[in-house]
Amino acid sequence: MSTSSYFQYGMRTIIHCSVGASVRLPYLFDGMGAKRVLIISDKGVKDAGIIENIENIFKANGGGIKPAVAGVFAEVTPDAEISCINDAVDYARRTGADSLLAVGGGSVLDAVKTVKYCLQHNIQNLSDELTTGLKLDLWPQGQPSNIPHIAIPTTAGTGAEVTPAAVVYNAGTKVKSLLMAPYLEADIAVLDPKLLERLPRAITIATAFDALTHALEALASPAANHFTDAHAFRAAQIIEQSLPVVVENPSDLAARSNLLQASTMACDAISNALNACLVHNCSHALGGLYHIPHGEANGVLLPIVLDEMRSFYLPNGRRLASAMNISNCLEMSDDEALEATINRITSLQNQIGFNPLFADYEISQRDEATIISSISNDILAMFYPISPDRIRSIVSRSAGW
Image 1 (cartoon, rainbow, N blue to C red):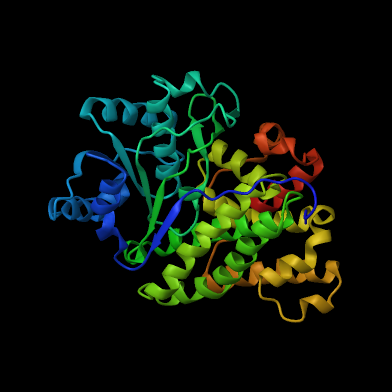
Image 2 (image 1 turned 90 degrees about the vertical axis):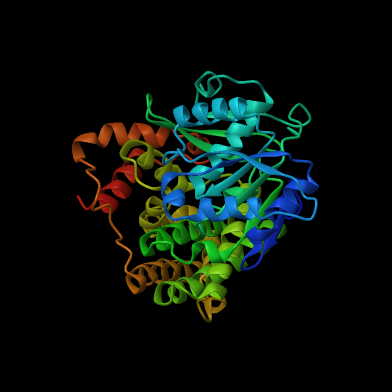
C-alpha cells in the first residue's frame, strides 16, 4: 500500500441514493441548465418498462422545471460496440439533445461516456479515435464537455457511473479498447435500488462478482493507498454480506441498495488505484473473443487467477481475507489468508449458485495461441504481464479443459 509516494485521487461524480431517487431527475437536470435530455439505454432495460417510467417522470414534471426528453436511444449493444455508439452520436445531433441520461448496466454507462466524448470533440466515427487498445487524454488538455450528464445504473456491478474511463468493443478487430479522459464520468449518479428489484438472478450475481473483483484488485494493486482502501475494503465486505441476502430475497431493497453503493465504491477504488489488474486482464481478452459478459468473466476468473498468480497476491493475503470478512485472518500468515480468501470466494459461488466455469461458451483448446496472444496484448498486460504458461493454466481451468 502506497502512503508516501505520489498519487492522485478523485471522485467528481455527485451521488444521489435512495429508493425512488429517480423522481428527482428533472430537478437535477434543470440545475445543470439542461433543456433537451437524450435517454440512452438498451433493449432489455426498455422492455422492462424502466425507460417508460422515466419518461413519465419528465412528463409529470411541474413547478417551473423545464427539461424535456429529446428522444430515446435504446439500441446500445453488449460490450458497447463502436457502431452503436456512432449511431447514438448521430441520433443526439439529429434530435438537438443538449444533455445525456444513461440508464443501464456497464455497457450503457460506458457507451454514454463515449457519446459525450464524441459530441464534445466533434467525432464522426469513434473507430478513427480508437485505433489501438488505449486512448488517453490528459489534464489540462482534457477539459469539461459542458454537456450535462447523469447516470442511473440498473445493475449493482460495474460502478462505471463514477469513472473517467470507458471500455468499448470493436467488432471488426474483436478488441476491447479503453478510453480514458478527464471529466468523462457522469456529473451525477442516481442510485435507485427500486430499479433493480426485478433484475434477473443471473445478472444480479454476475454484476456483484464484477464489483467484488474491482474491490479485491484495488486492494492488491501496487497503486493502492488509504483513500482507495477505504472504499475497496468496505465494498468487498458489503458484497460478501449482502449478495446472498439479495439472491435469497430479490425484493430486499435495503440489501440491493447496499450492493449498489458497494459497486460504486469498488469501481471508484479500482479507478484510482489503476495498475496491475490480472483478473481484468484475462476477462477483457476472453470477453472480447467469446462475448462473455464482463461480470460473469470476472466471477469465473477471480478465484482461479488468485490461485494461479499467488506470488503477486501473496503480500496482500491478509488484506484480501479481511475484505472477505474472514475471522481471525490477522492471525494467519499471508499464505494461509490467501488460501482462505480463495476458499471463501468459491464457497460464495456455491452458496448462490454461480457456475464457476465458462461452460456456456465454446472456448476451444484449438484457440490457445489466439487466447494467449489476446491476453498478452491486452492493455492491462503492460502493468504486470502474465506468462504464457500461467495464461494456459488459467484458461484451461476456467474453460474446463
